[in-house]
Image 1 (tube, rainbow, N blue to C red):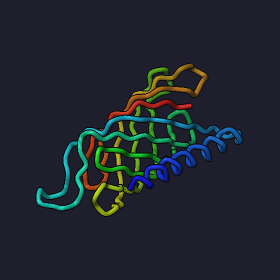
Image 2: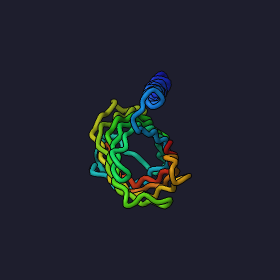
Image 3: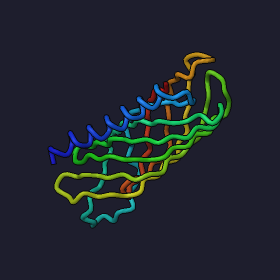
Image 4: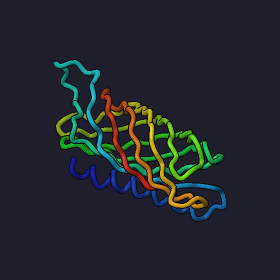
Length: 173
């Protein structure tokens, strides 16, 4: 199990480096987002006597998203992430769509993610499952004609038969 952590980290770093190379080599309007946060446990669909692994409150994740700006209010992206809790770690690949309210310095948005997450719990068999997320957030631009921004987001995340409320801080460049 300990050999798996470096492999997940390598996959995550390769995904980010490919996205960064595409970002710098193209004239299209791309963006890259790096975010990290905690996942607050909300509820599970597993029964109390189930022998399947359960995720808990001490979970966090880090994600890298490479995306495209269709206009100032619609964004589409592809991302990869790393998930960690005291008894498990995992990786995810997902698509993301965001709809922004305006194009001002303080910009609220809603969005969603859909993808696949793979979990490697200690002492249990590896598990893969669909992940889905509904997000609301607030983006703060670092300049009116600059696409760099910081953002805070939350919402609901369904992953591995568990419902979380993520709280993430991110940087968009």
